[in-house]
Image 1 (tube, each protein chain N blue to C red):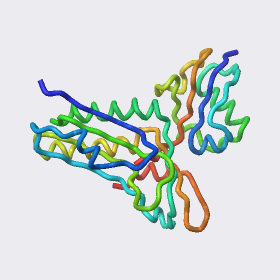
Image 2: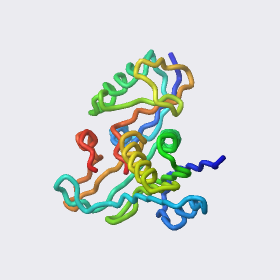
Image 3: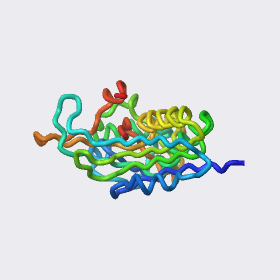
Length: 80
Length: 149
């Protein structure tokens, strides 16, 4: 069980209804965590279009989730 | 040894292009190319009333600095800056500004084009469109798959 912080932006922020939360998870990887939260909150964004950052760096979905991590799921960007 | 300057900012107040150009000014270099991205009143056939931008600040900064450094590496450029607005923007508002300074224009044009293309693809900034008919939506993935020039 890891205690982590998750932040949400844009469509995911609205789907979750908050900008950040602290939670405890058994998810081993970033992918597992997205699937866990997606099932819990009904995120409509397919993981294929989403990227993930841990501690302010883009990482692979297979990256492990560790105690104290700050995790951000990144919907398709649309700046400019 | 010339000094390389790159800067990237996320700003929640109006951008000031004249002040931004001053950050790049250098008497040794003869070419300045800037790009301004303005809020349009239409997108994908819908009438747009205003936009809201939001950014994941720390990662946007990191990713944009990587893009700026890559541009400086690939082109013969002395300085490059980019500022992205967040918050609510009216039609015609300045959403993103890019400026590149070089000895010669071809490098400045090339670097400026590369920076805006990569910023739109990679930097974690999102826009929500509010339409005149009252609907609103986050600009979705199929727009990103076919980026406009």
